[in-house]
Amino acid sequence: MHALGVDIGGTGIKAAPVDVATGKLLAERTKVDTPRPATPKAVAAVVTELAKSFSWSGPVGITFPGVVTDGTTRTAANVDPTWIGLDARTLLAEATGLHVSILNDADAAGMAEMAFGAGKGEAGTVVLLTFGTGIGSALFIDGVLVPNTEFGHIEIRGKDAEKRASGLARELHDLSWGKWAGHVDEYLKHMEALLSPALFIIGGGISKKSDKFVPLLTDIRARIVPAAMLNDAGIVGAAMHAHPEETGYKRGDGNETASA
Ligand code: BGC
Image (tube, rainbow, N blue to C red):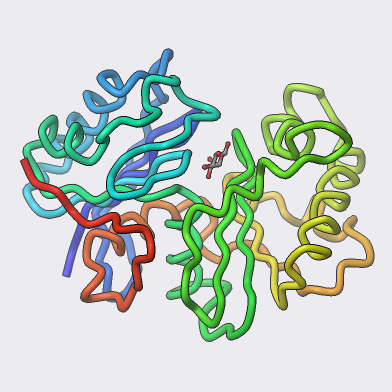
């Protein structure tokens, strides 16, 4: 069973066809810069172009960097605020003319990692965190996703955590790996105090560079591992979400598919 996975991020939009039974990409992924401003119309045009570039006519799973319930985008920390309250699933289904499902980006990455990657077979509490433009979170209890957790926005030292510890914060403030690892460490300690997970999975673009900061983290009881699928996890999870019956994914977010 195949689906096109599209991962909408604050900086790039990536897509590839995926075999949802194996989690493997069926073609090399394509990446386009996220339009600025990242309005629904501009993003829908990019998603349509990407689907066309793969001559795609099957189902499409799409991630969004904000809360998504019932196909409606509810927050927009790193994209245009006009996404808030929008029926994005219908907009994207109409733009592409295809069956579309949509979910939070970190939830998608988490689903893929639990099925095929670093979280495979893990019971108990697992937290995947992506450190990219924002901080994304996905919480699993015995493999079942609790959607839309938004742990990137817990407050640390009077600030949104992602303003201090995201990958973008490292770049914007020109932080050394050591200094930034200190911010991530503080953040993980907060997360551990709240949730006591058995495992943290570090996802997003930064997972490729985990050797630069994971060894610098201190006194965290949970195991900490990089995402096995690196930055492709969002694409794979998006595609899985388009085929929940095939992948055993239990949706708690009402994010069913819509078609044009
Ligand atoms: C958003 C999350 C998203 C994360 C990563 C945060 O700012 O609120 O929904 O998962 O960024 O893109």
